[in-house]
Length: 348
Image (cartoon, rainbow, N blue to C red; front, side):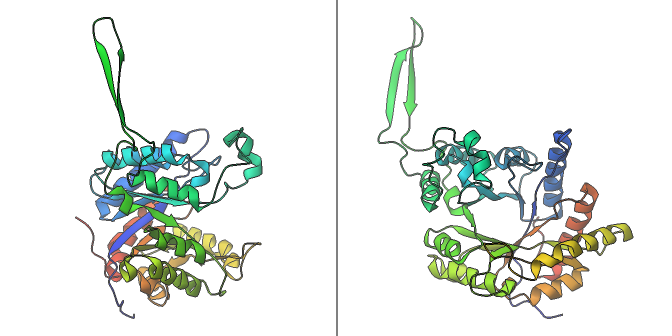
């Protein structure tokens, strides 16, 4: 097996948090238990996906607020919140609140652009402003400014009024989002799949999340495309080669899996493989193959992946539709077998 040039420094995982519409509590509880398991196994980070009008986590910030009270060390991230569904000022308040509750462990990942299926949801989402909403990078800049403590209004003030006949009420107003969490601005991530998004994230001092989906702009080789995005991001970032990038491939180790689980994992990957052969749709999206096999096999595949060799952080994505027991087996194998093969050491 080839040796890595740089040991893996941070190991994380990503889950979609599926649930049954008839019993949503069970699925949300399963997600929280998986995050707790991740902390016990020594993972550095746990990330949750974001789904609207689907049977997956629709409010990742709320879920991570709960997770912050059931864990003490593991970093908690979103991958990613589509900002087109959000008011930047209100989201900045929520993010800062959860960061305070987690004692500085929140890693918000975001993206811009119109909400998916906008024509179907715009009358419910923005009934009065649907045609004038700005889904450009300007929306992200507003959020970054609020999170980083830039003024949200033109003044702060103290207001007094007669709360009762006996005692006046004093209220203090701030000109910036409260609570303010000073370190949060350095832990904002952009989830990008295009060259322009990578460049923009670097120019604005964000961290960069690159997943198993990229846009085929310069090539039809997934690893080459992803590598170009990583290098373009770092070329624009103030921290240069030290700017943080996290890679999120789908990784399914089978070392401790049962025969039934192995068969299920292999069938899952087989059905998804055809989409990895050529760019998909008008946007020419390229999908990375799911990595299924023993930890030795997966490590060897990763060491030959051009983009993996450029990074030292990962958030391996869990498959969408597996059972709780499957996730326990996969995470346990990643933490106890695959991670060490990649030079990673469990957090304590």
